[in-house]
Image (cartoon, rainbow, N blue to C red; front, top):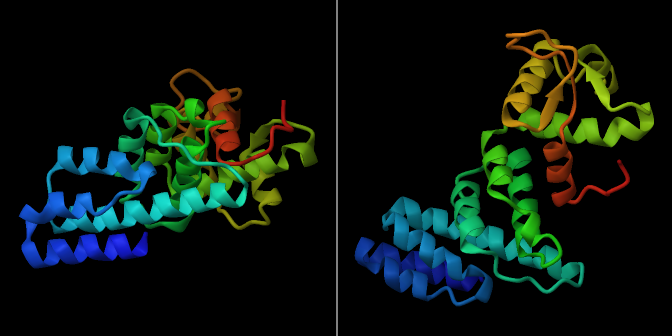
Length: 216
């Protein structure tokens, strides 16, 4: 797909925004058809062509990951694929970009495509890099601790002090607001959360991103 991306970008550079249709037509891979719907809806300029380039690379890598697992990629529903790729194409922070890539792969996987909902797209779009690291750690450490509930000080110790107390509180609070964590022992009107557990949605998101189903 790299040659396609290069040709699309060069076409735009030479001919300006009127060439957006020509650039889109150069992308003929089955699983990228919805990109034309997205660009057609948003209109064309140089920034959007750069986003198209990034989006095409994301799709290419997602399909390659599935191919390595012996899975034939299918084209996702446009109602899911368009908002997913629109947001993912803006992300450059590696912790969040990796989540987008895994969710995109899940959307192309026939076994998981129907479970990729707009909620998960919106959830990742609201996450910060610390959230991604802490959410994964909570899930991964559950078996070791034999408990699903987490207090700030306990998690700090398990993470070897790599996060400050306030960083974890901020992350807990953000992910409670998103719906990925559930608060424990909180009072009415509380705006910061210091003890949490994974919500059903948080657990399902991590499973879509490739975590095992060993947790109940």
